Length: 468
Picture 1: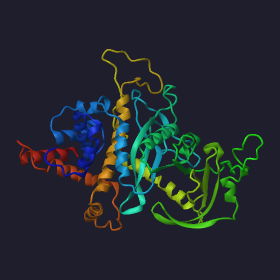
Picture 2: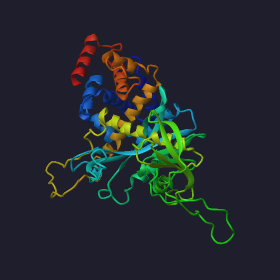
Picture 3: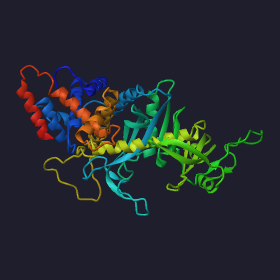
């Protein structure tokens, strides 16, 4: 690309310059742009086609080496993204959303693959849980409120870790998904400036002892509470005989609280972008098996219309009121939207790097069931590609939120589809379209470089349209 950059994405990418060498940073900028422009399946080879349109003839191996050999760290990208997210947050609390997603990958020689739970293919109505071969990624994102609707937010991924199956991973390297999540929360806590507090939000899998007992000081955990949780009262004052008690008497479980028709309070609040009415009971107690002696606030909810089963939630901050606990947990849904966007629009699970082949003449071992990856070949490519795609997604979102043209997506969509009258807010498809327009305007319709004329630009545009 040439000329003076007008793209908000290019302006945002400058923040990452110090994390790379000069040649690697140039490849990073071009790969981000090409990944955004790429349509269809996001194989590395297909993305390189768009790179060649933007830059001309550069050897494709340089972009494969960006993932497998170049010197850069995924966590360093996350630290820059976290700082950019903090600039858009005004309150004390920083909400971290934790969840995992499966990227299906086939082939016995791809590094790190294993059999994992496939939440998309599984059916929870009594049928067996479905497993699939692929990479399982634990992702931690920052929740940002949307400028056009502060009650609704978007998840911006900052850190990710690859969870390897216990059967295919060396014992010294194996860690559970919850342990990986706790590790990433601790890393982000080290980046947090004074005066801020982390509020970690997870589903029932991450509302567990492995996460709750490893929270950094001052960090709050909000999540689902199982209906048969053993709850205890807080211990009374020490009487001076024997060891001080760590917990009081047994209290009713959430299921028992739901059976009691007394004590329900009506609350009206906005959840998932719409106003709802709920019946609520709340208590401050100990969930000793999970949070130890740390008091928690539990919130039991009931749908007055009976459409949804009774549910229970908790927060390790007993001063957080019931409505705030429910609003915090509702923000977790934006993490599911993130998984959908990066898979369907940016091809998170589509790159085919990370595999290896034997040298010419080397005989293949006797076939065995299951994966047979090389111990090290392909590892860096696998561990870097998904974080790079998530970083690209985060850059797109932050660039769009930082622009002054937030309503252009809605206006353009209504011009193209005038029957789409109910559209009021931009979607990620609008974010992606705006980014592509900016990149094309910056790279093709800019002032031509020395020696290049209008015909060169027209030819580049034609090549790009043919690739799309």
